[in-house]
Length: 265
Image 1 (cartoon, one colour):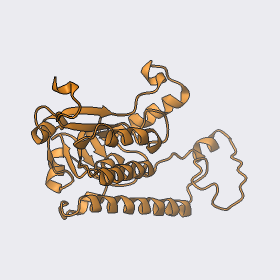
Image 2 (cartoon, rainbow, N blue to C red):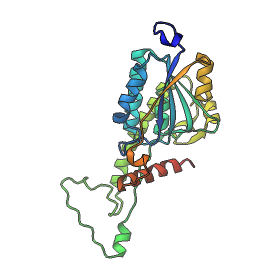
Image 3 (cartoon, rainbow, N blue to C red):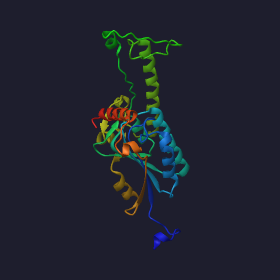
Image 4 (cartoon, rainbow, N blue to C red):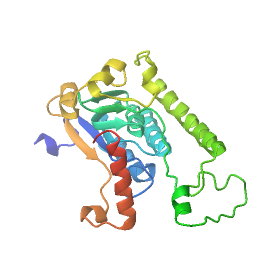
């Protein structure tokens, strides 16, 4: 009878935001601010939640999209005065850990992969390959740096220095984000920001996470056995739902497998 009378107290509600997958502006179904904005907004505003939980399972991806998503979560948490708790499944690595740091506290499984606080940029070099087959590369540019990092030309030390400097700037922003979010919790260990990653158990010792625990039991312990969960997350595209694979989708899948593969997942 109680549930039909709106002004009577109901069981506390926790909004759960699923942040699962690669962080990218690519295929639909991946994590990016445009796709997640309405989902995150609904999670914070609908049904007067008692708290918000982030379910995270991501090997990383775009640093800009990571920052945009995390900033949106923090803005809404401050606006609605709601505590945010992150729960890591298989991984919160690289950009995935950036998202985890949007929470007030982070929990993980003992075997979760945590960390990889660094920046990676990768490419291939085909200049010797095309030379071997008598292929001549012809490029016309306006601007001396316009063709930098061209994979069909020999590597230029100036280009390498330039792209490394950009990576260092992004890395510095990542470090600042983590230090701000985990202020007073991180141990003094030089390895934290080298790009290394650890299990959840070791990450707890390093201060990268607050404890070992899973979403449902931790939330029930905190808000009671009758706590209700409202789950929000992006839906897979029709192509993924029905197993269809276009060229773009196939490339996105290869990229996603590559990112997961770095962590043995």
